[in-house]
Image (cartoon, rainbow, N blue to C red; front, side):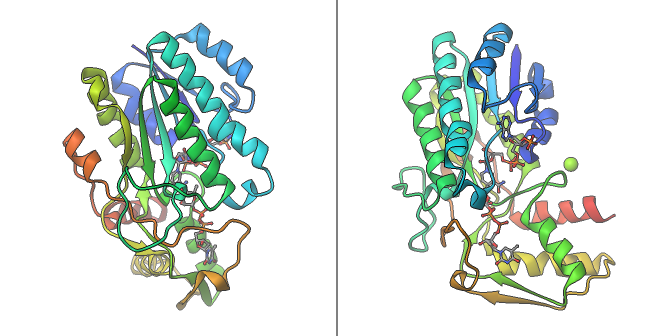
Length: 291
Ligand SMILES: NC(=O)C1=CN([C@@H]2O[C@H](COP(=O)(O)OP(=O)(O)OC[C@H]3O[C@@H](n4cnc5c(N)ncnc54)[C@H](OP(=O)(O)O)[C@@H]3O)[C@@H](O)[C@H]2O)C=CC1
Ligand SMILES: Cc1cn([C@H]2C[C@H](O)[C@@H](COP(=O)(O)OP(=O)(O)O[C@H]3O[C@@H](C)C(=O)[C@@H](O)[C@H]3O)O2)c(=O)[nH]c1=O
Ligand SMILES: [Mg+2]
């Protein structure tokens, strides 16, 4: 069985190279081999390969930059995934795709399940939602995994930014009113592999799922947790204070949702999996990058 992985060099894509390897003949394409900004060339390469499964880990993920680069973000996050889905629908291939907590407006404080109304606040969120909609509309066999606050040892993410800033500065100012769950790329890749196996055996499990680590935190608390653990592991960090601030005091081009809590029970029960507490993966991350 041929499996095509797109976005193979991203945080999640890198881990998918490992997690998908035992499922079939894996073709891992980075941007050079499979550029989602060049859909015609991509589609003809796709047609030539004719995979049974497409896993799309490529995305335009620069949330603030997307505000002034909406056309490219839409092409990569929505239009090309829609073309991939149409190809899959025509050929009977399956598509696994990732989406985000940023498809929601973040109102209230209850965790949202898959039936909750969407309402993205940013270009990134709107284009990711449009990508989901295009995949669902295509009628192809698919899994869309909505996740949040992704980190990995390889690639750029908030935890690594905090460690870098904490080495340089005595104090950090970090928002404390956005709540969510940091989720490891390794976990997402492993969940994708398990869910994909189920989909191939039981097509009726196809659909949209929330999939993130268990528990919750806010960005300031997360930063503090990472910095404290790094110090406990012997890192000489200057930073002695993470000051929690409201989002209004940290203006960004793209507004972020305040409530990014996702209810993942449907994913766990459908696939017979358990999503571990976020601290478990972040502890592993620190051991991996610091020792
Ligand atoms: N990062 C996060 O916090 C979250 C991510 N997600 C979603 O999870 C998925 C994986 O994200 P993650 O691994 O963290 O993202 P990364 O930013 O780490 O990786 C994205 C990958 O997409 C690639 N890419 C960008 N543009 C193109 C293009 N035109 N053609 C081909 N590849 C391209 C990048 O290539 P290159 O390496 O060349 O730049 C990069 O390898 C995405 O769907 C994302 O929306 C969901 C919630 C949170
Ligand atoms: C660097 C920094 C950020 N912040 C704030 C900005 C923002 O509200 C929050 C997180 O910052 P980031 O820019 O890392 O987060 P952001 O890029 O918005 O992360 C998002 O990425 C996309 C791809 C997703 O899909 C989301 O799930 C989420 O992970 O922390 C501070 O308050 N202080 C700081 O020093
Ligand atoms: Mg690793």
